[in-house]
Length: 626
Image (cartoon, rainbow, N blue to C red; front, top):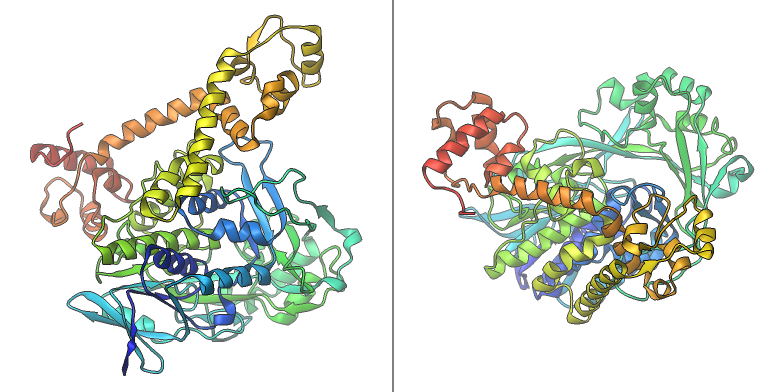
């Protein structure tokens, strides 16, 4: 069954964080977009913690904003607490985190979608891909209605054949209270795409009126606010506290006594769970030496009594969860509004996609978010944005956007997904980037705004603001090279407060390199520094204080880029190359790297095999001249 008005340029399946970014990007670039979702009331739902950011993830959000995405804008508009984590550590690991109002976040995102020209919202379950001659030409929903499209983006989250587990009971669902997406998995398999299963989970929610806050440690937000979006005039909102408690031996004994009722430990769940966000059962079993685990109690929003029990995800029976919760200090009388649960779902191992996030098997089919084997709202949004940009580029006949590892965390995330055979839900970590000192949350605009402007998602007004900031940074770097702080009594009285002293005049650029000196100290010593905007002074301080380390990392990038000069032909048959191990041949034929650099990052490919490939490519002049 088809209708004339069901012709679209791009269909986006799923309206979570990936789907929203994809649909808005495509529409703003000029495509006619169908955004299909199982429930229009759950657009941009945060089924786990209503929070954005944290270590590494905050960098992703800033990069999304610098490219012209919207997650940072929505997080800034709906936060109820804003906090910088690791603020006393180096800039590579500092991370902004926003506790969001869950419902307000969803409403704000939906308003953007409904007010964006070219987006047509539809509540439907997509059950089939329409593919002709290896190219996607549309989709079909559960009512048999066809929607034609020149490109399709799948952002199905945990809905694809999702199954929820609470103890040994289970039922078909993608999230608590929402149906699973049934049928699409069969269509993907039919079109030659391999599927596997992963598992994730979420903690219980409790009634805030049943918590004894006197037993909890209060966690407040920052007095001096930072924001995700590089747009000016971010909103100043009231901040609300979060709380900290912890498990104890009684908690752990209840968990150990009930492991036989866990679907993970009884074998009912086959999918692999997230390594870096384990259930409380996993924590107790894997880290048996720990007598306690931190548990955060955080509000879901201002218009609800629900409190999120972070760090307490579980798939144990609901009655056992209540017993466990009531062993936690402050939660002895807690009333559970929603139980914790685990969900097992289908995903597409991303080695089947290119760096553009387009399928290698079906042309015009793009995938983003948890369907690629990731976890986290930020990882999903980043992929959704890239998939959306590239779906538009595909139908427009333009060059694909493929970000490098040295340019961004987004590039690192996608390169890891399409190059490495990921076995558990992928979470972005600062340790995953070999260039994390250069790829900081504070300089995402410097790295990516020009790309966002060239694509067409950063308008001229915002781009002018970016250029003015960069010029201001340049001028301030030049100024502090010239201005001298003299060794007067008044100066040393100020420096003494920070454990410092100078015996001679020093340029600001020299003084700021001292460990105890930051730009706030400089502002006490130099009146002209007080007029420098905080986002500019932050950059100037980092670029000056870490100058040697930054240059070293730039050199590493330069050296690593030499392997990127070696381009590998798409049709190269690795099985016919002599002196390469069988394991490497299998891996290379499966992933089909574009460059020698990508080949070197494939797990199981030996350095000796890379050397053989390099010799072969040099012999046939298959490399870019330096």
